[in-house]
Length: 416
Image (tube, rainbow, N blue to C red; front, side, top):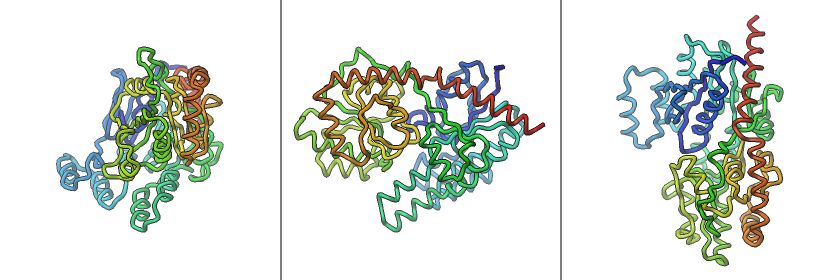
């Protein structure tokens, strides 16, 4: 395949928080390693990319960097050459919305107007501007999972009228995404589970969705023999008080098991919301000395934290693609994970799968692993081999390249 000029779009690409920045960085590197010229057009916060990959910074206001009104107002007034997108973004945020996807799509459309790319890959903005980009360029829309699932789980946790109104206002961008998704010719999903949910929630024809699993940097997420595993150190990942991650159930399990195992410790990669639900729960259960949060870690630092732990838990209630699942397996650590959505597609038979929302099953699984650690360590060794075989970037990058070829050929055929 001849070298292509590829543009990756990403409305926000934080290098540490969440998986989008990591996904964009690793996808761009993988395609560049296959000989293609790759550029990334990203809104703030911006990704950390290799030097051979050009970044074009979309000048969004990044209003969620602060929740102080004066700081937000300052961001608007300090920006030179303000556009309609800037004013829309500012007032929409004031009204409780999340407008970044819509304004990013508009800025991306303006940027590509006079550019020349062989293909554009959009990382799940699903904005109106993307439809106009699709008219000019071959386009792949990546949807990791429909955000309808986030809204569903958030509404399950609180019946308060004001809370429900605020959440529906925040997720009002879903109206745009539901309108755009059925008009996209090529959607890429990282799991069969997510493919079904995208089709159902966004009314997308299944034949328009291709499944290519996300990849893992197996050269970074690996065993580190120099680090001694702490016998009762457990590790998990959770975003700030996001119900979808199911952290409560791991916390309740620790509350029970610490009565028998005094040295138990839960390390959470992520940070709780100050004075939020998670902090209150930990305080209520008197677990302040048993649970530690760490954040803003590099991939290497996350891998080392895994290597120092004896068991990983993924207690999620939904995963479009469970990065923490694949990362733990790649680090060769015994894993307990819920048997929902995409997770069994990743683990195969190489993890202890449990029902969601069950602190008791987490507790029982931990006891079993501690009692039969050598058996579970052998399963973890096979689990890493499974990840290397199926989810390395060497394997997944070539699948992306094959799909890119199909999309370009289809676009060229339509033009003729």
